Image (cartoon, rainbow, N blue to C red; front, side, top):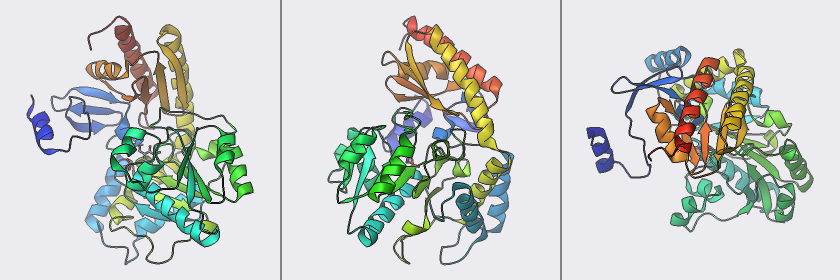
Length: 399
Ligand SMILES: Cc1ncc(COP(=O)(O)O)c(C=O)c1O
């Protein structure tokens, strides 16, 4: 066994089944292992490396800030944090932001904000309606909001008050709404759940129901945000402005960051009620500001929409050639291929052999989420590799 596999099995919590590759370098859509072998990266740090690996804009933002000021404390004002706050509010249409360090923390903060709002403005309402197959992260409240039973079961008792309903089913939300309901929490497109895209009018109708019933609409755009689906935020496809919005992953192009935003009417935190040592620090927010500014200034979401249409065409013709692909679904540069059998893990391994990183989001589904800067040639190359891989799977390639 290679030394690094040995080290991992010896010293690291065994929380992740890793692929047998040690990545040491990246550039654009490509990453390289320690032997110099090249891979097309269609995982992109799980939809995080938005501008590709080691983009000059991100390197410059980190480098310049590292020379200037890396970390102080939120006891003081720092400029990158405020510039990113202003840009995020202006581009999302929400009013206030809080920065943290990950998606789970952003969701956790949004849940706390919802609880406080319910206590103060809705007679103590605290229940949050969430969706089956949702994924919101691994902290206790975020995992309680998450649909996957096996992520929750080992950690009970969990924070209570999460009411689960089928995704893409407005009537179920209406039926679940009661006197204690404070909010509805949804991903506009479920990412970890398998790239589940709801009906075009679902979110708009959920928004209307929230208005009618006096509930907050909390949208988790940790995976779908920052251009991934062909708009800066996925809710912008659907005309459903949230009251609370979470972001993370692609926001700083790979530098750890999280954020939650709220409209003024529900921005109810008082001094001391929430905080984070690292949250919004100058290094992460300078990275975030420059990445987001690049994405906005260059209208990257429009480019993503165009590339997404190209990828969709290629995937549809791939599905036509391979009967084992029963469905393709997605938007922009977030796609899944549903297979007629539990062969996704095998396909991921065969793709690795062929120089492509993809992810088995479910035993029966493959997920593609390349950097937003991917070229059409790279999209074609990846689809060609998947074509060969599926042919091998169909031919009964060794597992
Ligand atoms: C929609 C959504 N919310 C929250 C999270 C959790 O983010 P993190 O892993 O940064 O805590 C994820 C991660 O995949 C996600 O997809």
